[in-house]
Image (cartoon, rainbow, N blue to C red; front, side, top):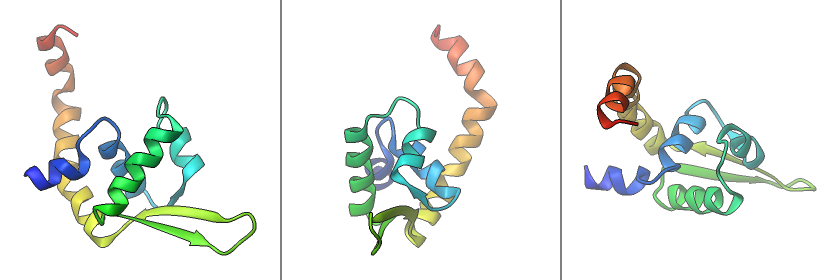
Length: 102
């Protein structure tokens, strides 16, 4: 469990996993989908996920260069493992928020 938490822990990494689970995305697309994330934080989190082996960064030899991010097979497996957490949150989020007084 601690390995998975190290990979996806933090505010944005799990959200990034969900975005990339839909298919390859360019940096600007990801930034638009994740409202509120700064460019630096997004870059840092993508690098962490890439270093962890769950995200692949593909640079296309074009001018200007096109860069796409996608999940690796390891990332696809992790995204599938995270899906039950998302479903739990969808089912219980309202109750959790009510109980916490938020």
